[in-house]
Structures are given as structure tokens and as C-alpha cells.
Image 1: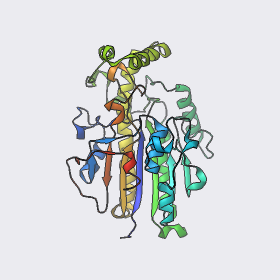
Image 2: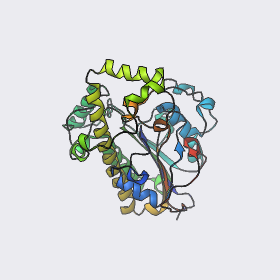
Image 3: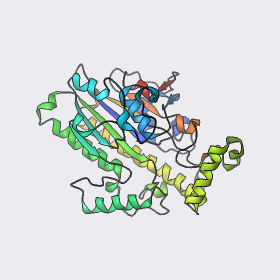
Length: 341
């Protein structure tokens, strides 16, 4: 085994920590990840540094809080302040690097060896897309972050997680034929899902029916105690979408289906590593940048303040040298712990 293991950092966008059987949820949304957690170390007290994408991602890569990076919104990544980030440190140690999926950080293409961006509108403006992928990306864009009320009319192969894993595995396979093949690799495999727009193809659309969803922990009746910010967010949802209540129910069901789709693609990626004999020399890290209301307080997406459903995230470490334990680790940790670890 190399003295420097390969590292695959898998990040999802807007994934709540508690919506899995491992945490006692009534639906089995992510069975593969639950098994992976028991093969390594997982945390049920892991937190984001901010319930919004860019600050969380910059902090993950730099090991610094938003108060130090100066990135406190989705719109000022150019202000990122740090001395050396995860990419700098790994490249200095001889790693070949890749970003596949959603970036939304200070990272730029020239700083990594491989760059394959996929966002909430798929791979728009990305060359080499098939006609079907282009049509799907346009479909995502025109959903305007809504929940799609029917099964997505495009196959699984068009979905972002599938395309991301396909590109990542091609890149890893290609390393063997290059001079970089003798170097360890770092892959940031970053899924833009289960962030809205909430859409999913069959069979995932029908896996979790609306009428079979467990009740939320709270509903809009709690808004009276939550204050103006929560109440205004609820009002904005109804102003923007006259069918907001129906949207919310369908969004919840689609969200669960998206979790299972992501789970299957992570299984596909890990299965690839096993087939190539790389699993034993690769550290797998799984996190999310932040959570989602998924119906709590009558809300979806993210927004006001720092409630537990937006702040607590999944975190799993598995691979060489990492202790296996089916029970969660007792430590309180956060995204800023990823880079120094």
C-alpha cells in the first residue's frame, strides 16, 4: 500500500443528516451509505459552518470558518482568504487532483488536473454533451428550482450524479496510462443534488410515494413561535408558487427518491474502486455542504437562521487506517475539520 492513500471526497448539496435508516428514519433512503458508515467512522454530531453553499464549500477546502475566509454568501467567493487550501496541500505532496460536479467555491479549473463541472442546470455550456443530455439540462433549467410533479422524462444516464460518476471513473481509469498513474489521486466528487429542483426519474419517482411519507417533525403551526424570518419565508413560497402546498409534498417525495439515486451512484463509484483494486488504498469521505427543511415548519429548501435541519450534516470516513464502528462517534465535528484531517 502507498504511504499516501488516494482520497475521494464525496459531497452532496443540501442533504439533511437525519433522513436515513441509520439515524432512525422510517424510510430506507440510503442503504449503501448506511453500510459504508458501519465499515468506517461516522458522526451524528457533524455540522456545516453556514447553511448556504459557497461559504460551506470554501470552509471545507480551506479549513477556515467564514469569519476567516470572508466568504459569507453565495456571491463573493472571489473574497476567499487563506494561505493554502486542500488542493495546494495535496499537490505539494504529489497528488493528482480533480473536481467533478458542483464547484461553487473559490476553486478554479487551472488549479486542478481535471475539471468536469455539473450544476443545478446540469452541464450547460459544457462541450461534448449528447443531444439527450442537452435536452435534460434545458429541462432542469426551466424547472426554475421547482418540484416536478411527474417522473422526469429522461433516463437515469442524464442525471447529474450518474454523469459525475461516469466522468470520475473515466478519469481514474485514464490515470493508469499516464505518468500520473504512479501518483496518488484526490477526487472531489461533488453532486449538485438533492438540492432543488426536486426531480427524479423512474424507478426512483415511485420508490417513496407522497401518501407513504412519514410526518414531518413540525409544520406551519410552529411558525408562530419561529418569528418573522420563518414566517416571511413561508409567505414568499406561497407568493412564488400558488400550488406551494402541493409542491412541498411532491418535493419531499422527490427528495427521498433523489437520495436513493445518489446512494446508488455512490455504490457504483465504490464498486468501481473495488473492481480496480483501489478500495483498499483509498480513503472515502462523505459529507454534505448543508441541509434542507424538507417540509419542516411548512418549508422546503433553506433560508432563515440556523435550525438543526439546515446545520447538521452527514459525515462518514471509511478506508485504510480508519476504525470501523456501527455506532456513531461521539465527537462534535464540522466541515472545517475535513482539510486538516
